[in-house]
Image (cartoon, rainbow, N blue to C red; front, top):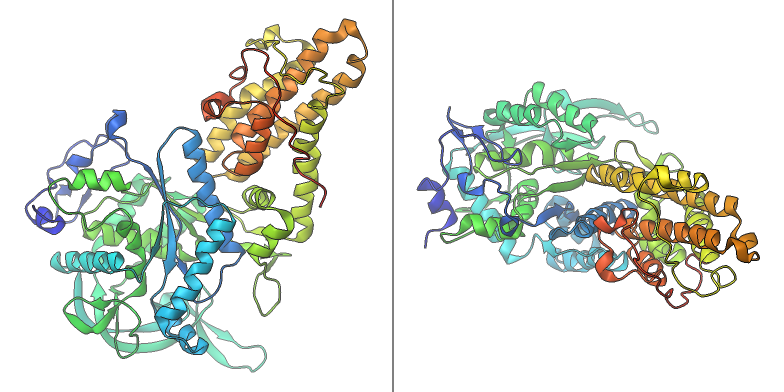
Length: 576
């Protein structure tokens, strides 16, 4: 049986230029001729379709989870559940990054050995996933044996291909960012209290110091043109476009060799360089490799393409905060290009959370405990708020007033109110879904129903368009605009008057049916964001589990006959 690296050397992947079968698989040239993955060409056959592979960044365990961690994880889980509602198999991986100087220092400050410190903090991130109903497939820790094997393998591959060499490195180093910065990316800053002058990284604002040391370096400049070509040929690979343009600018301004190790004398908490125990592998090369580890890398045997596909590789989307864009959009693709591995299909770089328009920090006392927030407001309402108001391009702003407004106005006032009123036994005496069928053609619809009918017809495609581009806020806005129209339709038609007039029985049934169609559609589309509340809603509406997929969100795809409403479920969104 041949191993992964042996197959590489034996030409398992072709180097002849070909027309690729899908835009999802890219061709690059390292030595003048294109290399590609002929065995990975996409096909239309369902049995060969790989799982949709989503990742969060693995979270650094130098501190406990905060609102930003919760947002990223819930965003990833929402995308996972959305893909599942569409009928796709999904792999979602998350975990913790447990090596590096900051961990070494935090453990020392806590008076614990590094491994014990990591064990203590890592479990908090796992608990946050459980509390927030994030259904991950794999939770990876970089201190695991499987990950250390993967890191050693990628290092050897990069060395064998001539992209890593040993040399002297000097530059502006940030302990906080665990990164070197070129002179073009640092600026002078002055402490307003002491008047002290010092240098900081322009990108992160972290303090930097001039450092000279011997370490291993990665030949990043050799891949600059390839990276630029990849980005320009795939303008949607980084979302939003403003971040894509930012990365292009960074590359156009030039790159230098990247330091990929640290002296063991300065950093001993990490993975040793293979065959050189005096050096520790750079934390970002270590951490980024987790996206390979969870797919079973290093793959072995003669069925490598099958193993890659079964693990979901390559990633369909890496979800990250904007502060780690450079590492994911330049360094990671460069490592993969050098190792001749397929690149991620999308990188979603979202914005951050502020509080009252100010950056959250412990020193200001304006941080949000995610677990306490969920306990106070409820899980699904918190998930809804984060996905509705979280920023992809621009920062989202958290205040207690903002989240309570969403709860009272959208959830209780619109969705919960429509459910309570329309399912009331006072109006629906038989407590059944009316058997009246809704016309498919807008021209056949009663003028009193046309606005809601049109909103219901248009909503699924609008929602899909936004969720496919990760714009959960816009997708949710579309759902609640429809629900607002449904409430207006309900009020305008005054079913409390219709129920008193036997001659208006047919009209009453039509009004109720439209309300139930609106709730059914909303319940299906809200499953990725509010899985528990959606289940309660759909159960009340007697929607079978087999009819809760995305295709069933279309108008008219619901009940074909009259069926009893589900059992009483109480108030969907009770007063807080």
